[in-house]
Length: 105
Image 1 (cartoon, rainbow, N blue to C red):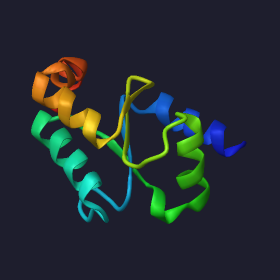
Image 2 (image 1 turned 90 degrees about the vertical axis):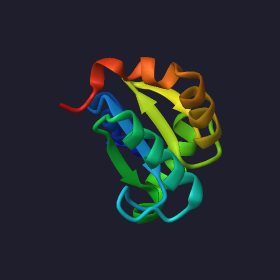
Image 3 (image 1 turned 135 degrees about the horizontal axis):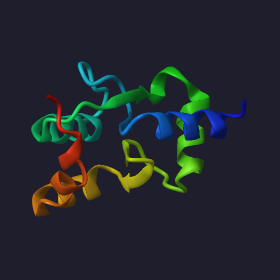
Image 4 (image 1 turned 180 degrees about the vertical axis):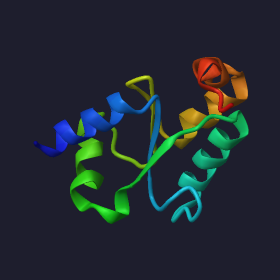
């Protein structure tokens, strides 16, 4: 399975997935930390992939979405964006709408 197939599988199998530097418990950059905080504020369960642990994933995810930076958020198989877009969508309430049916119980 190619790295693109692996990423496609991860994005498909997880309703909300964040490709980030570090882990939700120990983010390795401010942008990833901010992305995690937004998702926690929304109260959704999410999968996280630490791109620093796998150079193939780190490069592959940039090609997958044709987006050069990390973090990257996917909701229901769709690329949402990076930290700036997440902040904008969170502030406007749009991100909450996207994940409304995915709230953690």
